[in-house]
Image (cartoon, rainbow, N blue to C red; front, side):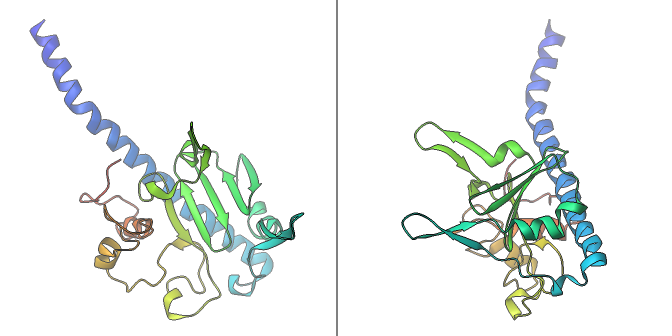
Length: 220
């Protein structure tokens, strides 16, 4: 009985760490796979349509509702031309200006013009709350359940230098190239308290070889 009790105590102490380790491993594996998959697709599309910076412009399209207001609709043609033929997916939804891609490994990505969000677990994209109904794409978990990428291969301004003439990259808009900024920027840095959404967390993980750093500031 004493031995069984000791085993139970040890299991209780180690299980949370094992679960967290598994979650981190899933995130690392699926982040790296998503990055590789999407950029391989871009390379294949370039073979058919030329350099990515010469492609059609990916921008929001609008339709007018019955009250005369503009409503964003998804630029389906862009996705269908440059991405859909070159990736494997379970299903694609076009909803409220966003293209939602479900991947076979259980992950999900949302694409809207330049901004791309990746969910290592598709279930984290939809969060149901009793009072407000269905909430989609909750960004409060940026850096743990959702990760930010950016696609802007045509804008060669200084703020976009880490995206210009490239494929899909972790969000690095206006980055100065230092790890310190990725970690400590008050607006989108990868730390506990920020004024926006911790968008730089993806770049911090990429900098570490797609491995979550041991001193990563967020818990899984």
